[in-house]
Length: 411
Ligand SMILES: *Cc1c(COP(=O)(O)O)cnc(C)c1O
Image 1: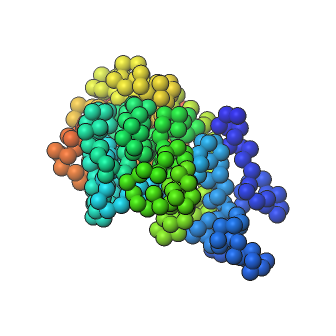
Image 2: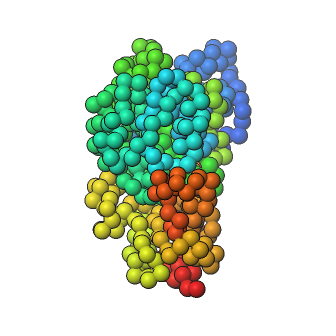
Image 3: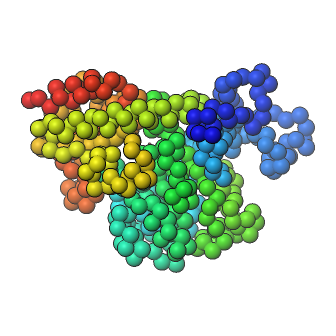
């Protein structure tokens, strides 16, 4: 079955007493039991009954199960934000004294999480350009507990060769962890390219309307943790087997101790988002490709960066990994920062906001916002240009969007 069929036919773990066709939103902190025995079974994991909503909630479990069935993953954990999912994934593989080899071109908070938060707990971050395999290989040693990267970086739109990274990681006994927010699992099958752990900010494509925040942590059960440098994961492997060691640490240690399971309200909205994810992704990407092509004809635009354009440096790799429609985000370069700001100020259909893959088209100047507190040298190192505008294309009519862009480019 294809994505849309699978996602629409996923059934509840336990039937709803009224046969509700849409998963109800269970707004409750606690769950009641018929007997002390049933209570003990739930608390000790011998039954599927939820016990307390910090640990599980049927509305959240249903979202997790839908994603699990459509991705074929071993386990899925839904958290309150994309950053929570990244924090859980990187914390689960970490221990003081170990290091994580990560991409130099990451979402800003992921860089800070590695450098400042995990760094302060004794986990060393090592940054490399993930389009350069030799550089990545040179940083791996026997204390490396994970490789972490984004499948297409933002806003640079660099594409890593994921199968090659996976082969490198596995030849050195290291799990491959990918942030796949930019191309969702309806299109990109991370496990086929050797990704072991996938993290997604479901705030983006999956929520679909910018209705709330969320993060998904997907474990494919493909990595053998028995020889991993974390003593905790080695011990887990002895208890529950290598396929479940990571999931067991997430579900029984981090979810309960760090406490940021997704709320049932957000899980409900994201479940609705999953229904239309595939069709929205295709339509938004088609419009993005068409607009990127049209933007190249406009003299005020000095460069259009989209990996779906045939002369883009990453076109072949992007096509092979993500297909002909690699998402709804592209960037344009104008003459200067002033020109970029003036363009953004004049937009009337495209909105001035920071989200990605909303149903509405959005524009932002990354250098003065997301990267505004970095030094010019740091921005240069991360290839964030002063004259670059990032566009996230929504569901509006393509012709109307082009008109808006053309008008905003005029002095
Ligand atoms: C937005 C984003 C995040 C963070 O997600 P939140 O849901 O805002 O916490 C992480 N990675 C990428 C690539 C993102 O675009």
